[in-house]
Amino acid sequence: MEGLPEGVDSRFRYVLLVSKRAEQLIQGSNPKLKTRHAKPTRVAMEEIDRNQVKWQLTQPVEETTALETTE
Image 1: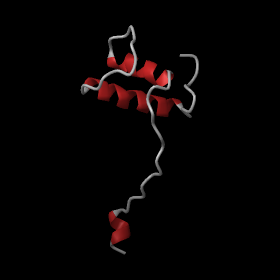
Image 2 (image 1 turned 180 degrees about the horizontal axis):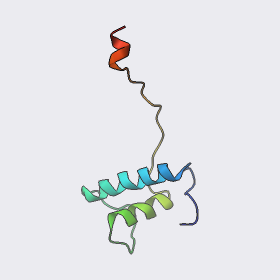
Image 3 (image 1 turned 60 degrees about the horizontal axis):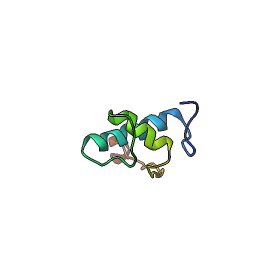
């Protein structure tokens, strides 16, 4: 891989996307394209690289801690 796919802003996010998609493939999801790869991780990488997987960022959820609730 030369660079990151379009729309992916960091290597960390790329790894997260690939790992989540690979987990879907392991759980029985059908691949979105024909590929020569057999391993779910490689299939997921190719799908992400070709923009076959739709994803979006969501706003982080603020969590309250036990210290904040007792005040």
